[in-house]
Image 1 (cartoon, rainbow, N blue to C red):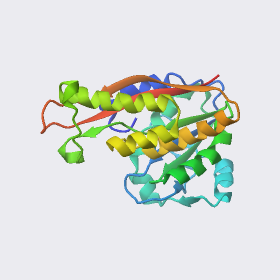
Image 2: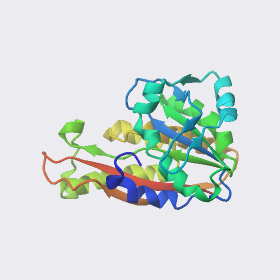
Image 3: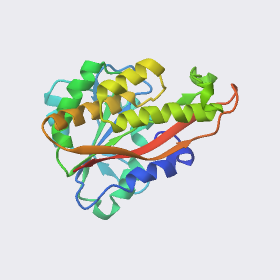
Image 4: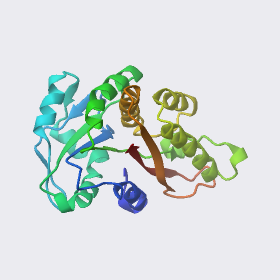
Length: 250
């Protein structure tokens, strides 16, 4: 989820349907920074996030462990309140966990414009948390922002209408993510510059997965749904794409 629920809510629901509230106890929410330049990752300075359903508690013990690494900065209250990439996931998280609402905590992490080596470092750091089945990782992103207002207008005419070209481009990226290879994903972004705003949180997750696979853990990722806010047919049009997927550990 990344925009108004009218655009992406039903798409996102496909991912939240996979959440098992009976085993989930800690929920890491990784979202990209839209408003402040950030070269690392940042943690919230508050204890509680409010939602229309009930309050979500931030896990201060895990925050303490993350602080100790020296790899994080603190986001100001202003940044925290302005940033929608994490916020949009809070009501969904609350809803999915409603039956166990006093038994879990959240770990919001604002992800900056990380270099590939930093994505690797953060991936390594988060991998030990990802290995625990009671921890859930939520990654916030949307896919292609297409049109003049996004300064992105890649078009492969062999695909037919513009919206088909966008879908083809997105699905290329999605199938690379499904291969769970961070290097291929980086190369895809360098080649097509697809405007996936959660590319760094996705990169961190792929690197964490990579780390666990090296240690013999077996995982697979599959996309469950794809949607576009509108169908672009000419150069004046614009659209944003959304995709929902789930990582399974076998």
